[in-house]
Length: 104
Image 1 (cartoon, rainbow, N blue to C red):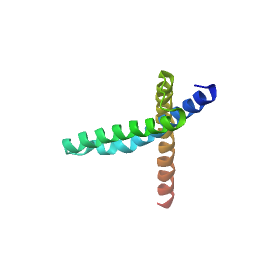
Image 2 (cartoon, rainbow, N blue to C red):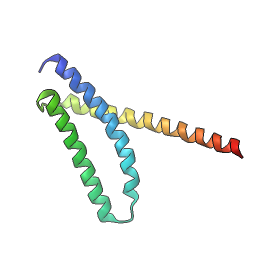
Image 3 (cartoon, rainbow, N blue to C red):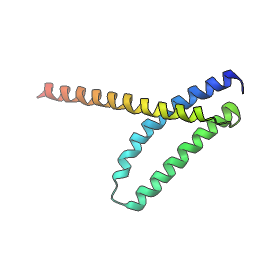
């Protein structure tokens, strides 16, 4: 595999980690459903779909070759996505609170 393909794969893995982080936050609200069967099925489908999407794109980029450092960059992207996403959500909540306080 050429260095160009490796760099493209690493960047994609990092971006996918951030995307997976955002989707995990969205999925998190469904985990508090009262129906246990619904929780298990929804989580299972979510994980399988995310893995399939990743491998489909990796197959398009570099013929499906996965290295351990690609997975490492998914984890790094996920962690950065969690930190940044929570930061932006908190900023949005604070802005909305300040707007509501001004109206009163």
